[in-house]
Image (cartoon, protein in one colour):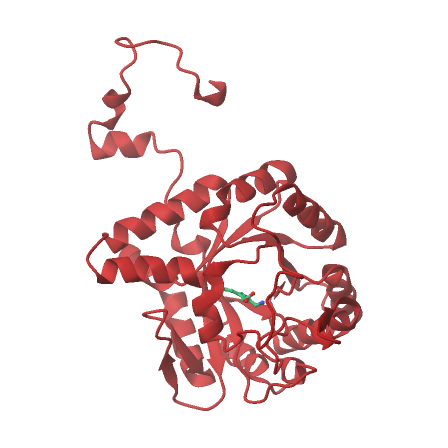
Length: 332
Ligand code: PBG
């Protein structure tokens, strides 16, 4: 029945007949709620050892030193979580983001350690400059502007150093033009033709990244990111961004944030048929946690409903800070 057209009419058709019992409801369920193997757990890596610093605006999330990152990665894998996505918070930030492509940087050390300790976990890394620049922007700044083409060389170096450390998937989140092609070329040339690219193709300039910027210590010192991230009003433009990234060699496509952009997820899925990832971002997480802490919503049910919605919209991969919560509930 295309479009869900009802062939019979009431009283011959009674929608409630199939809602009478759990087993019946499950039998006709169109989308399963997100399972552990759909989930990617984002983690924040800091220098040092034995450190676990809670992020106040994201209850349950912490910055962790490499040893603790390994522990939580192992726990995640034991619960069945498919992948982790690593964000680095380096000791030294500078104008060139040089800590980002240091082979001995926090991310590179974390990747090597996870590879050794939890070999079957998929390791994804964020490829961006904002956590590594002293001004907090996602690229190289000249005359107060983020310079697209100068940034590409840095992004390529970051991606190659992540691949050298053992990353399975590199995830450019900077929104510079042409970076997927540049990264693909750099990876291939360095002998990493098998490393995949998950491109943040449709990344919107969103108010919902606030808590992340606390966690990653990446609040821009001046201006904002609207000169490179997308206008929340645009979906045709998102489709152009996705088309470009696919043409440049992206293996998976990200839409971010998730909840205010379910229509974008659906249109990207329908148009391109590529694996679509959705990032259920920090502000979306914080809203649910805050309301639940007040006793205003049932957290477990709310999370399940949101993740089901993201899957129903067409995402097959969900990056979410709820991954561990969901996995421990499913494991029971
Ligand atoms: C960095 C980056 C951001 C997020 C992921 N990668 C922040 C930003 O663009 O300011 C946000 C993730 C979240 O809010 O959970 N380029």
